[in-house]
Length: 192
Length: 203
Image (cartoon, rainbow over all chains, first blue to last red; front, top):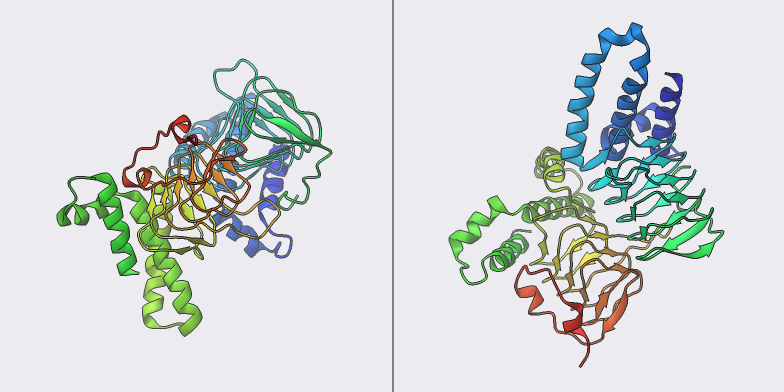
């Protein structure tokens, strides 16, 4: 339970600017940031899934799942953001813009960033992609298949990745090629 | 604002019904085109910001602000489009009815066609925004983070990271210039989106 709460705090803090970490800034982010709302709905679903084993919570679960279903349906149809509960996403997940984001059947590390129109993982694969901590995945990028992507990787907008990527690499193009090793993406990460 | 929107509607209806354009169809298209809704919202917000900077608060501007607040989220949710308020959009621009546009440039010239699922914005870590010239054709599923000159053509699925000169054709991921002089007037006359790059090769 506490780990889910910590993750949600990390998600919110990614979206609040360091200059204005007040309650007002947090509320503004919660109200206006569609990506953050989608991530929080996903965290709520994961929380429900994790509390299956706690019998004391069973009376609350049907109402919780109903709430989750309504919220997830809203996020999917109004914002176009689809984060399946089969995705295992670390704390501090950030979605840049809304529209066409699909995160399914994959494992993302902590402090990952994702742009609009990205597709990470496919539902039909037996094993999905594994992405390391601090990865930045640009808009319109696609990652499919059982690939392992290292820590601090930068995947530039529009790339298609279907092969393993080493730590700290910069990937460009379709098919995605590593054009640079040791690229420092902390400069472009939002509030990491 | 009104004359610009009328030009948008004229272009939209001409694209949608190339041979059967008429005034009542042009009136009808306001109900059927979600790209026009995005343009209405963007032009209204742009006008509001301009007037607000000049005049401060007036009763008309307060009303306009309320109206924008009412229609902004429904239009964004319906169309999945987000166009930056400060973009200077010329008259007679077509934005796709299929939506999913994230646009953050400095200006769009008149006569430009932008198809669905296009992202235009600044490079990560670089605050400078690109400019899109007049009579540009951008195909679906493109990402553009560089300037496009007047009359440039960006083929579907391209990722443009280098400036494209006027009248050139860019294609590929990462995009290269595949042709220097190309007249895209035929492309801009219909909503056809499947372009064969082979037919554009020089010669």
